Length: 365
Image 1 (tube, rainbow, N blue to C red):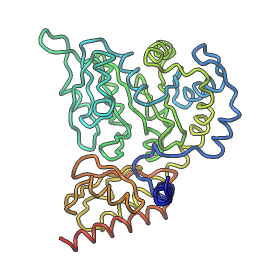
Image 2 (image 1 turned 120 degrees about the horizontal axis):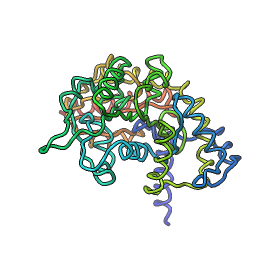
Image 3 (image 1 turned 30 degrees about the vertical axis):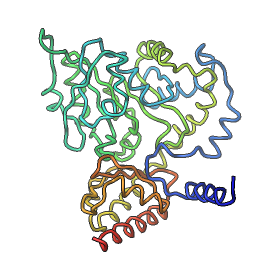
């Protein structure tokens, strides 16, 4: 490698290391405490049920959510898809919000693995109410697929980290159960919702038949999610986890970090929410960017940048050149996500970069 190439590689590496990474809360790094716990973890073969650290994590997760059992999975997508498989039969429909993760970002696996199709409905702020669900329910018919499951998302990622209030959630669950159907909660960031509402997750999710939550987002673990529900469902879920390639053997190395994330992670989310509101208030002052800070409820904010004259792809590229990372969700919309590896000072730094780029663009225009 010549000297110029080596210097470029070092520069790129340094820029990445110093970047203010607002792409997602999935980019968090494990803490020194987590790394030590992973190094020292007592392990066994989890496919045989013999990993003591993983067993402790599953037991503790079940306790936190007030459930009989929990199942560790490598990703939230796998947890969601196992739940759909558990609750449905081939040829049915799953009602979900139009921007929901199970519909848009899980590789059409509900069709591929469970033989069901989504029946989507658009809801303000991504919050599905009973009125939304009722409008799409289908019972036995010789012309249309029958509804098999209701899938909710709290917080709702692509609606901007919005929260489904407890009363709304419970009403959907109560009426769905009365109709003889089940409810799965994609609670990838449900701890964010619980912290924002000041409620324990067990109360917030009690009426769902299954709930999936992620350790690897705001809670800060490097890998892993859990699916919680009845002991019978989780026992069957292990079969589907194995079918999907999720038998991870000595997974206690991952569970050790997950235990710390589960116990300590929720306490740090309030600061992420405060940083997101700070970021939103700053973005609202930048010409060409449209966002209402009062709508930012947790750690995700999505803003309209069409007034800047740039697409999200162009703005993301220019931000990256200045050490700020963010992702577009459409040509007009860009998403910023705060997390434990982004400080208030870094949020302020990001705002300076965004304002500079948008200001320069406005001057050229």
